[in-house]
Amino acid sequence: MTLFLNLLLGLVPTLILGASIAAGVDDDAHHRRVFLLVYALWAFTLAGWNWHESASAAWIVVWIAFGLIALVWRALRVRVNGS
Image (cartoon, rainbow, N blue to C red):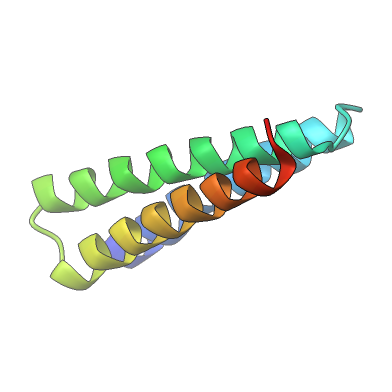
């Protein structure tokens, strides 16, 4: 059950991004930077949820790693694009 919930909840931000693009929101650089920030915060939330549920340490590490990758990627995009 933990595997299913982690995969399902991990896809939520991606589905929301796809829905916003389908609704006609322009996929500009700012939109992608905000998505990376939201995805990072969501990944850290999932890491905390897994910790609270005493799930496998692997899930906690995976979500923390995804969150850090998203934050670093966002920081690099801000530095390159300047805003």
